[in-house]
Image (cartoon, rainbow, N blue to C red; front, top):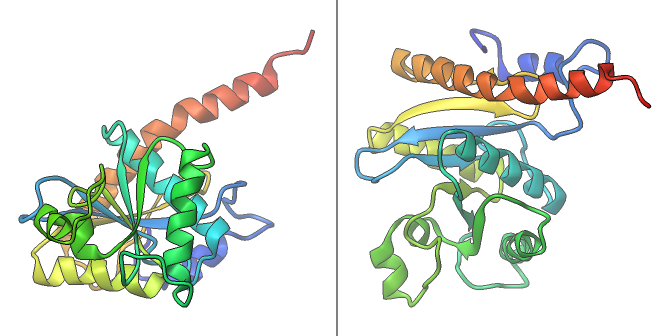
Length: 222
């Protein structure tokens, strides 16, 4: 759990090839938010680790967030792949990557969730806004996960919701051998407690996978 260290110091040790906690999966951060004006939990990713992820990185970031939502009891999380506009524009790479991620989900390259994009933030979380512009999908207006186009936009969204919408937020890093609670040093005590609780839940979900891998390793071949 991150304390007074900077994020760079902590993550630098986590990804160390000599003594770190790396796995084959990409590390990514998820803000889990409880927003008074939204009827269910909302997850924002990535808002603290991957600065400018490409398509391959976004696929892994998306999968990490879907896995988290499923562990928390959401059977088929709805993922809104965000961009500044809801139409595909060749001059805006985020819109092309959003559409590609949706096609990747259709082909099984991203599993466990329902994707739609490109979507703007308002179309992702407001049915009224989505209906007004004629956007109809299983995700529009009722997203569980907001997949940001880059770290800056994800961080801004999460901080705005915490500061202006009175959202309770918890932060977690996924993809390492153990989950990591990661919040900003300026976050309040409630956010730190929520992050610690979230890490405990995810650590409990990690254990069966670790046990299975150890069992397979120890079982003699025939």
